[in-house]
Image (tube, rainbow, N blue to C red; front, side, top):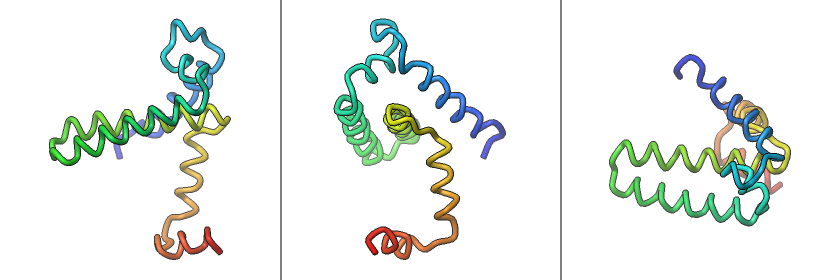
Length: 109
């Protein structure tokens, strides 16, 4: 991982939080917040579909671009619900070293 990677995600989280009360006519992020979770979820769905199509083509740059859009919109959703990348990282730390099968099973128990 490049130095500063987590800092970029943390800065994005802070920017998203700051945009929650911004003017929707001057900020794309603020306009998503103003439209509510359904609009944010729709964008996640659209961007995920675009990522799938890019991955089917197998070209690196489109995959990276679409994956970045997916991550951004997921972070918008997290900020909408007063969460941040720290919440995701904390959960990733919790899951580290646990079999995916065992982790999934623990959520249904």
